Amino acid sequence: LLWLSPGSHLLRYLFMGASEPDLGLPLFEALGYVDDQLFVSYDHESRRAEPRAPWILGQTSSQLWLQLSQSLKGWDHMFIVDFWTIMDNYNHSKVRKLGVLADSHTLQVILGCEVHEDNSTRGFWKYGYDGQDHLEFCPETLDWRAAEPGARATKVEWEGHKLRTKQSKDYLERDCPEQLKQFLELGRGALEQQVPPLVKVTRHVASSGTSLQCQALNFFPQNITMRWLKDSQPLDAKVVQPEDVLPNGDGTYRGWVTLAVTPGEEQRFTCLVEHPGLDQPLTATWDPSPARTVIIGVVSGIAICVIFSVGIVFRILRKKQASRETMGDYVLAECE
Image (cartoon, rainbow, N blue to C red; front, side, top):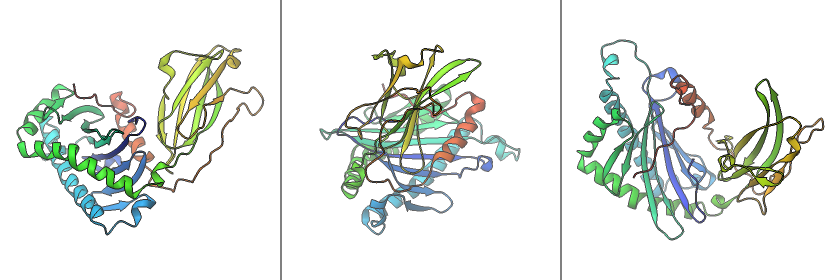
């Protein structure tokens, strides 16, 4: 997840694909987000960009949409070429060329830009291969940072393409910020909606011990802070951020934090939740009554329209990477 600072806005595209169809994934699929809102999707089979937000629906004949559609088609081609380049450099494509049943491999890309309140910008372009950090483009130095030894061959090859390097830098530092500003103007109002979370605390008893789980449900935008208090005092900073924040598939998000507790001391702990949609922080505690939960907060504001669900895709990718002990979304390190 990318956490936005106040007054900042973010345009990002997520590309993903599998070399073999056994994962149920296409060779290339793209999702585009402005801040936390999905606004466009694209896949290799249809080769069509599909609007996924109400504020973009009426713009499908505009010059901006036509440029976006052409960009996605270009990224489709580039993604497949890059995929085979990376596979070749790992000797993963050799098996398939010999006609032997090959394992499926995955490639994930995140690229985009952030525009800050002072009009400064930050671009990012990162690759992950088989769920592991792979390469990251650094526009300041015009090189690719290899996250592992296996990525070095691709790094050298891509850095030899001077035109690609220039185009990547131009996109991150000029084209992407300009495009983001245009989308923000189109989505003015809709992109500023804020839906506060519904908060509840549940207790879980297992052979390994007793725990409390604080859940924040159906909120937007995705940036949220959840922390545990013991006797009204904050616990260790490591539990301040949610363990995970996931999309619900309807434009809202959910997150949670879990805390191991000593049986009988549950009432000493309080969950504190802060979110842009709240006028003040919410607090919730576990209620030992039959309902076993206390819920504080009301979901209000303008309803977020139903958008394309990405939950299935991420579950498939997570399942694929379980055998590699890399459960969850990968996070690439920043350029040094």
